[in-house]
Length: 205
Image (tube, rainbow, N blue to C red; front, side, top):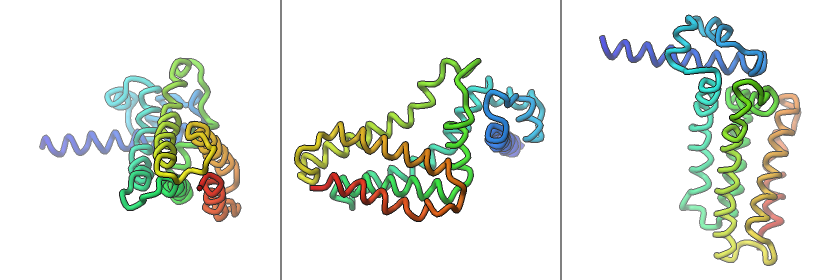
């Protein structure tokens, strides 16, 4: 009986997260109320509050629900011991990121919410730094890989690892914005792997 109760509670939480993603995407975060999310999930407002303290906590839970598996995919490539050249690891992890974005609608929706449907006002006025944390962590990861590439002689002479990391960070962010701004099946998806390869080729020794 206890197991069934836990399973039902977890399913309710899952339903709320899925509903929050849909409502945030359709209405924007500011105009999305917990009442709307509860209705979309088929639960009471009290059930939402039982799982989440407020809308901000629900927002971050929705984000992390997507980011955790995505980071599992990209980090598996970035830290793959079979890739002895750190530049290959960076290139592969960025390609994996865009592969997941292209193939998983839920992942794409969450990034669209974060980039174009979230305003930093009301209860979100103080959380902008937390929203940007995953991007900063990405920058730190690739800077470490660029430094490792420099130590191993794979990075082209004269390139500063920190500058290279910031450049790749900006390139990836710009490509993400471009991807989300384009209509699905616009043809851009087919060009992304070649664009990433060309970007990384400029850094190779």
